[in-house]
Length: 299
Image (cartoon, rainbow, N blue to C red; front, top):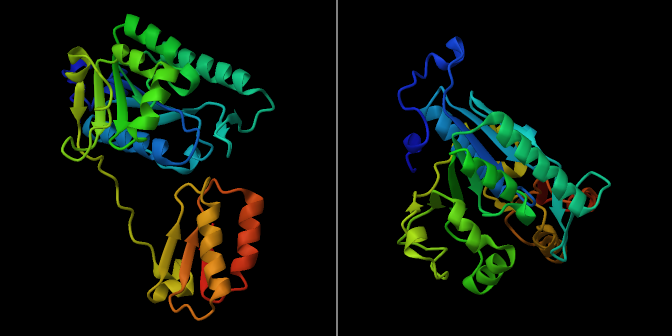
C-alpha cells in the first residue's frame, strides 16, 4: 500500500507515543456505509493494517453503518458512528433511524465529519469510494484538511459499475472534479486485471497519482467448532449467502422455492441471511425454512 511516510513523522518511537503522550501518526477514514458491509470491511482492514505496522498510530473511522459496533478493531483504532441512511428499492435514500428528512440527516452527518476533522487533526484522510462523500458530505472537510496540509487519499475498489453507468454518475455528483483534492488515489486491485477509471478522460496530473495497491489482505478467522453449526453442515451442503442481505430477498426466496417445489433435491442448503435483511421478511423465510428438512439458516 502507498507509503504513509509522506504525511506522518517517521522518527517517532511507536513504543513511547501512548506512555509519554507524544503524538503518533493520525489517520481519519471516511466510510459512508449507506448499504451493505463492503465499505466497512474495507475500512476495517486498512485501519488494522495501519496500526499493525505502526503501533503508535491512531485511526478513527467515520461510519454510518449500524453494525460497526459488532466488529473488532486493533489497538489504536476507534470509530465515530454518524446517523445512518439507507438505500430504498427505487434507488432513493432515507434516514435509517432518525425521523428527519434525508437532507437533514446529510447535514448532521456533514457537521459531524467536519467537527471530527477539526478535533482529531489527522495527518492522513482516506475517503472510501465516493470522492465527494454521500451527497457531497465530505466536501467541507476536504477543503479544511487540504488547507491544513493533511495528506488526502481516495481509495476505490478495482471493479465498480460499468463505464456506461459510472461516468454519468460521477459527472452528476461532481466526483471527477473532486479528484483534484486528492494527493493519492489508491485502487485496491491489480492494473492488469481492471482499471476502473480508464473510461474517464483524466489529465496526466491525476493519472500519475493513481496507485494500484494489490488486493487488500483479509484476516481469516479461527475455525470454530462444528458443533456450533447446524447438523446439515456435517455432510456436503450448499452455502447460500447474500452478503449484508439488504438486497438478497430474491435469492433466498428462489432457493427456498426450489426445495418447496422439489423435495427430492439431494444436497441440503444452509442460508446465511446477513444483518441487513428486513426483519419481517426474515421471519417469513424462517417459517418456510422450518418446513423443509433439507434447509437451515443462520441469522
